[in-house]
Image (cartoon, rainbow, N blue to C red; front, side, top):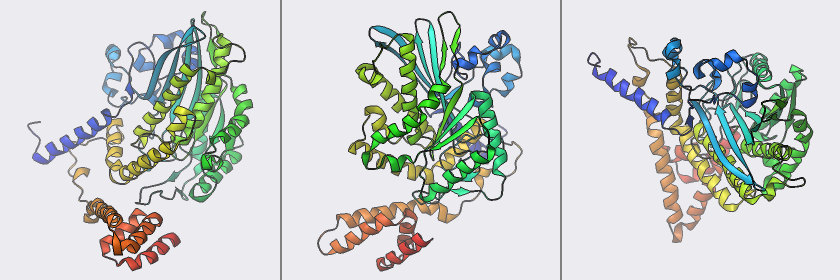
Length: 484
């Protein structure tokens, strides 16, 4: 440290702050005895030689978040026992009882460190076919020595598209026109088939508006691939469940029931004999692969768990999980906590729609909390996620610090408009609040402000206040924004 100059010392502090930021995010797990990076089924299909390897050697590299930090340890086999792979995601473990029979129920979500990042900054896939926000979720049951599991995955729509933040509440997705989508698309599903078998794609994006081209392109590419191992179904979640009609999710469950029965689940008895294997998985996605996706995954997992507990003899014939009040509460809360963990790690806030996951009902309070989380996401996506993305890239080794680099990227001068933008936004919002509090003769103007606030983007509103426009010009700017 003595040889470092002032600027380099400041850079070190910034880089350490980035690493601390990543490590302070909840959801890092390790074990000294159990391989957290593999599913029960993968572990059951390994060789004796594999079982004798150290946890670091045999870990699935997709889910080893400290792989870059352990690169020097990995080259020295004699110290492998001191180098434990760290997984990022979510784990819930509960001891449960139904009909006086005790069993352990676990939920594990493993986030991939390939194409890792934050919402809006990392979308789609890379050239190797790695999808953004890819998460493998495994539900496990232990009962009387028998073990059962059901695995699902989620991941960004697997072709080249982006949705960079631009101050609009919902930036328009852009599908790249200069790359060959099919190469990355095929690489993605080739690796998925090798890892999991058959693929049932459940696409939950809107089938109108800005999300429509993504759904159409996804369906077209699946058809063009012509792989019999891959099936595709689109379900417009928001349209089907509009006006609180959440019972319509059963329509999707009925469509997927036959496929789920065909895929089955993994089951090994108390003697270690494999009874059934899971032959395929459901790959679910929405835009972020968070809120809508988690709701559907929890319903699919419940259906699989129902079959598992009946086969293990925990549930009597004709009994339903929904009727077991104590376990039902544990189940719903764990899946809601899983949603929150994945959402905080990718979007920066808790998940939306968790009131349905926790209670089975959509509530007015849940809508209010979704609105609040959406506002926080808006701020973070536009003003703080750049730092989060840089921190993740540094932690994972996507960016390496060069000791002899003459100009650090930390010292690149930012445009003054970029620095002033957050202040402008705060002033604009404050003026709207002041207008709402004004009384008497200003009521008409206040109403105009409110109507304008509801139809214009944050960016247009900031421009009006920043440029000192008279408010009578506001409708023109709003109309121009809609035309753009």
